[in-house]
Length: 264
Image: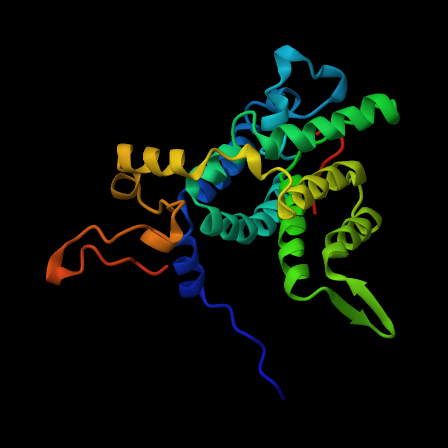
């Protein structure tokens, strides 16, 4: 009989210790906010995306709603789904790019949240509250699907050939049917921004690479911040240069509750 793969805690520990900096920060924020809701239950109402409450004074909701979750199960499933996708994104584009896109009033918070709010208020004329990092999960899945599509345009199911880029949309539909209280519109909003990023239509939202390199060198981010990922992967490698010059290797690159939830 074939043996089942065994859980290796050492591999899990090694993977967690190798997570890049921005991924660690965002995951910590998700877990910390969930923990804070235990004594302060009002935080969910404060952070959730409720379309009727979005105005110039509450734009912060577009940034906080992916970090807030309805309960522990909701939070842990989203963390497990988000971690490998976010880690891969940061490893490819660098810590500064990831930080600029996932924090502040930037593309990956403002755009999907804004689209969801617009669809709810203008088209559906509803006020469904959403929260959860699954909007980022589907955003990153859509971006990955575009890359996979360029290398492998189709996959086959029986006699049918299905475009690879549409696999996140299939997953969105399946989850909307199987998992109660999930937001189809929210997940589609996240996937839509992921497609725009994957096809290069919103890459202009990232600061120019020359500016990012200047910031890195001026602040010496590679030397000061552990697990920092350089924007210039080809020159510095995944985590920059080694911090020691011993044996002449110092300059060599290092290898590398109310409301509706958005959840898996």
